[in-house]
Image (cartoon, protein in one colour):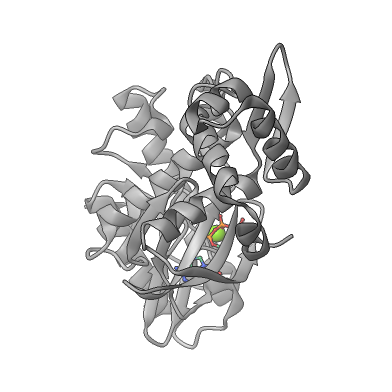
Length: 296
Ligand SMILES: Nc1ncnc2c1ncn2[C@@H]1O[C@H](COP(=O)(O)OP(=O)(O)OP(=O)(O)O)[C@@H](O)[C@H]1O
Ligand SMILES: [Mg+2]
């Protein structure tokens, strides 16, 4: 079932149930159905019947523990996040799927406020760095909580950078969904540049501007840079480090550990870009010089 079909199928009580799960998922890996009954004002049997229906449509998963518990699936959380966006008037409705990867699902959508936009539904909780992963204690948080944080981190990074760095304008964030400007451009790896040196210089200028705002991308590559005749855009920020803000993403690290990690991530970002331009266009640049330029 696709998002639009599912969206129209969930009834008023279904949304009430989902809204309770969203409210409670921060405290429970599997939200007790009794709490949902309490939140929604619906009788327990009715809640259980609705949950069975939602589980059949893969919107939630139900688990019998010492109590009957329920959690969102990725699909269900995306659907509920979409609902919140629509109810708040951020978008009118979702359009067609532009891409689906391991880590996100991207749709285009119409918005009365912003025109044509994209909605990115996050699928994974960051950070991707193993080191940080080991340090993090997820406890019994459900993965959906992490995807929400991941979406929030992307939204924050974009908000911090918009106007200073060439990124899609961020419009809204709800749940695991981020609404942003639709960029009419292609990924760097898909095109053959006629002016690779200029494009590389522009990218390095952007990385420098990001750094001056205290943001390290952390997953910069030919896959996360969009290019057209009009210019260059950096996308895909869920794992970004935002140095000046306290961030739940990296909250297990001390400030000096965070700086060390930021430094490693910046080096890796630059290495990815320089490697790509060396391999694809034979452009050689001295790594340390580039690093100095970006951080100066
Ligand atoms: N603002 C945008 N405008 C146009 N296209 C976009 C925009 N944001 C993302 N896309 C498209 O969606 C793809 C995936 O987006 P993004 O890189 O942000 O997510 P991802 O986490 O890398 O997802 P995946 O797991 O698919 O790689 C991009 O490679 C790009 O083609
Ligand atoms: Mg990407």
